[in-house]
Length: 396
Image 1: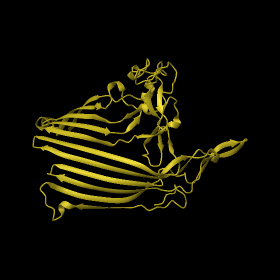
Image 2 (image 1 turned 90 degrees about the vertical axis):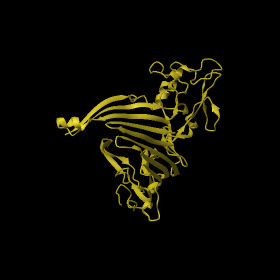
Image 3 (image 1 turned 180 degrees about the vertical axis):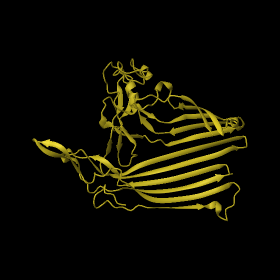
């Protein structure tokens, strides 16, 4: 492949893939009354990425400006003639299994190594620009995906099918051409997950005087907040994600249920920071019930520091105080349906019909007590509400 987005000498690259599969259950030596299907598969391939656009390698100037009363142009982007393909090397192995002609299992394991990652990085302002698109380093991704489908009951007037899926993914930055890359709470570093939070660690409230406390970069407790004490902490990527579905049918009545789950992972909540302002925003914003559990006298063990009306003690600065595990189980959807009998519909020239009651966003279970609020990421928007609806479908 060739791509003019890149430098003249590095715009050409070769990509390809190959795969193989073995249906073991079709072999003459394989005989089993339990295993109906057994398939092994593997693949390897390379893929290129050129997502930055078509002008980054060449550099640009913009016109329409003036200097000292004369027409002038201004540098729009810096030329980078070494800008080249981001290349991924992907290995995938998997297995398919069917048991007792009822249970199907799919397992996939993959690893992806990405070289010459593309990104926009900061450079010296003496160049006339603040950043440049370049190849910054390499990263490895690993993952496992599992899907299980089961026909639990399969009769003429009664059936029950369930499915379960699970996914685990992880990554690690192997090399980085800059010391660190990123902003806010996410900073890339060699040897770490690219989704690792870089943040100051919260040490709680001083029971003697109600002051907020943090850990410095060496792990010592301090009452002075400094962003220089931010260290790599937890990842925003969950350990496991997945879903569970159930389809139950008895004669003309069907019940469908869908759940999703997340295990592990952390989220920074600016919403929690704003509603736990320790007196700073008390006149302009609603506050969390956590603020009731505040320091009031020496010896108090409390969630929140001593409040100061309209003043900041830096307790609301970004820290692990406002991190939450994203572990949860969500009941997303229930559908109760009824297939109208054809004997009734045929009288009216209707081939088929179904009426359904649908409930969405039903419930969410988290490890947090009610007083700790939800871990919404910001104050914008509204939380998802439970909705009820009905549908009627017919075919003629």
